[in-house]
Amino acid sequence: MSQPAGNGDGAAALLRTEGLVAGYVPEVNILDGVDIVLHDAEIVTIVGPNGAGKSTLIKTVFGLLRAREGRVLLRGEDISQRKPHTISRSGLSYVPQLDNVFPSLTVQENLELGALARRGTKASERFERMYELFPRLAERRRQSAGTMSGGERQMVAMARALMPDPEVLLLDEPSAGLAPAFVEAIFEKVAEVNQAGVTILMVEQNARRALGFSTRGYVLDLGRNRFEGPGHELLDDPKVAELYLGGGSRIDEQ
Image 1 (cartoon, rainbow, N blue to C red):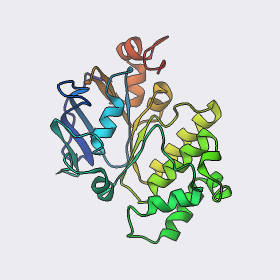
Image 2: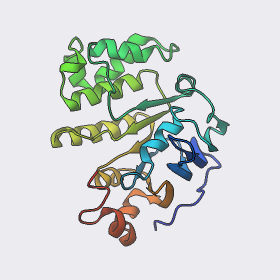
Image 3: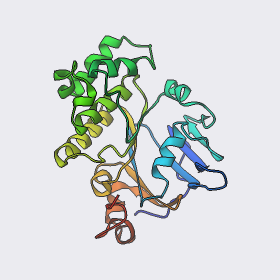
Image 4: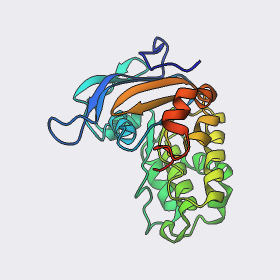
């Protein structure tokens, strides 16, 4: 049964936050003590109304926004004061919602930039893995990313983020603004990436679809944990459905 969110079982967590407080302007907190836990090989989705702090959480985890209080722990090590490039080398990759490709560069060149973040494995092998995962990109590897559709650009952004071979992929609204056919394609790719061994932390506006294939989910509201549980249990919880998933819900209007 889904439940009001607590601290969770973080003992063997791959990634977790503890009492995370963060914001963009002084004395105004967008996050007000958020706790989440990710275990190896999970897909964890964060949902909630506009202004709940979902994207702020992802940015704070990746170091784009400095935590005012609390910690971000990666395999038990505090990374909350590190810079994004250092966090990336530790095994996290981030795909922002907007401006997530270099439009004047080709698909291949975008992926080459992603390869720079981690030089441990042969780049040629990583290129082949990405083109196997995203066959559409293989066909368009010499095409400028800026001339591609929104769904294709999202695939470029995901592939580039996977080039360093991360343990955790952070996705901020991967289906936002996409045509319906591409929404389903992106969700299928998220599942494939996870099946390949990458843990996923995702913020997503399409709450029902995302929770439907997530291992677990968290509902944020006003910068605080409201509910957590297995994705299918959150979908079936009458309270969650009434407040966040019902007709004209704030989530689905984002």
